[in-house]
Length: 192
Ligand code: XMP
Ligand code: MG
Image (cartoon, rainbow, N blue to C red; front, top):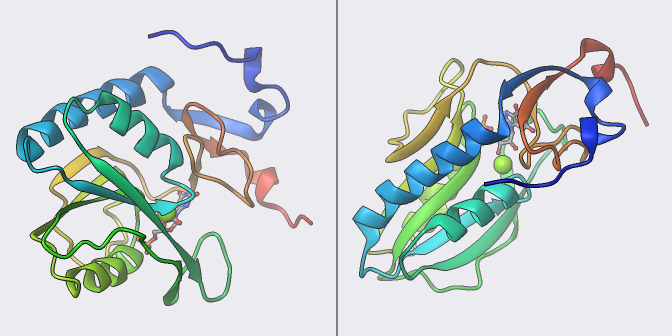
């Protein structure tokens, strides 16, 4: 697969200290996950559920790689406190439009850290009595996990570092990088 990107990603790449996963590594793994997922959900017409906005590229690439019938829906959460590096309880600010009772639901997440966000959302969805509820996460940070959540499909284990790109942001920036990388320490200094 080849895609065209502006060389060096314009004004974003000077802020990146290290590429953790390249575009090719990510795309290859997404393709593999799509293969595993399609085996489980063939003829089940699953609903893929994602949390905005970080899952944007993962969901799009995953859906395009799935050779089976699926539906997709999104919800959105806000962390009380508003820090992009989170902590604290979450609040549902946009709910699903799809009734999921009796449906096979695959929860698609970009990154799991402590697991608190996902745990809250899974409890919320479980209460609606889906036929099944599984999790597919692209980036798993196992180090700071507080709640054990079974991950049926997992892309990569990554270190406990704040990462950006492929949908993940710092103050809403860097989502459009096609790779996942680390920010230079200076970028974290006070802004806005
Ligand atoms: P928990 O700890 O609840 O956190 O599993 C999951 C949420 O925290 C955010 N998060 C990140 N966002 N780069 C980001 O851009 C990261 O490295 C990162 N780690 C955690 C994210 O919102 C995720 O849904
Ligand atoms: Mg997220």
